[in-house]
Image 1 (tube, rainbow, N blue to C red):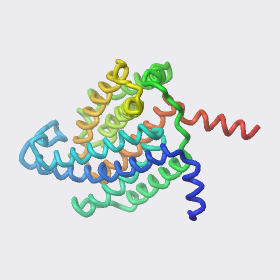
Image 2: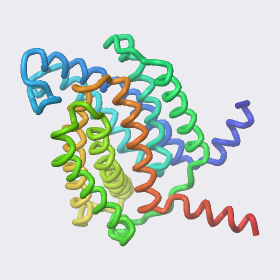
Image 3: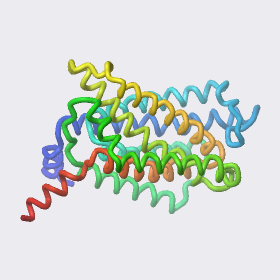
Image 4: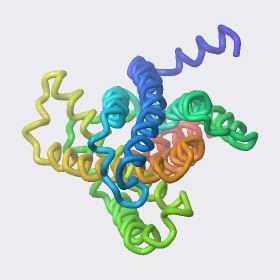
Length: 289
């Protein structure tokens, strides 16, 4: 892409979208590295205790795992800030960078092999993410966290949330005990489904924080704390089953599958809740007229 084309891209993006872009890229660097550090910690803990993949929590006493966890938290904080400035449809796909980082580090540090199809998959993730980023819609103006709550309690999103919770419960209590050690999709399914709900809640908290810092206090509303509780529950669930997935399967396999499923479900949830593409479709229709 030539210089003029890049100027056109940035001209079409709002300043908030650009801030979100930079924060999301920084987040991917930290999160990609954290996968490898946590994997090293899980392997070290598993050598002297009960492995996470079979229900153990010995990794909680492993310093290296906590270093990886702190690295991930730094990345998630940057990600949290990114959601305050840009739509989820723009921020989430940028996680493709974390796949490249984790795949390269897994090859160098963990000596895990990345086959031809794995390399092709990573490349396709990056191409798809760039395409989405360049065509990301402008974010709708939201004046209060109560407005986000109204969006979250509309019938369409409530139906999606209920379907996600039912699917997660079925996976946890029926499929994981039987197939968790042999089929990666069940662990990743739980992480991705819960992740799509956590991202919507993180987006709401990001908006609340942004408005609070600009002088409109959102901490007085119970909806803010309700979103906080949802984030805590979803993140703890994600962390638990992601640890099991990392302990059981290769990082080079876990990372891209998790990214694709998580991103796809997050985009779907964002379309349902925030209706990010509605204005784009309307604009295209009016231009056609």
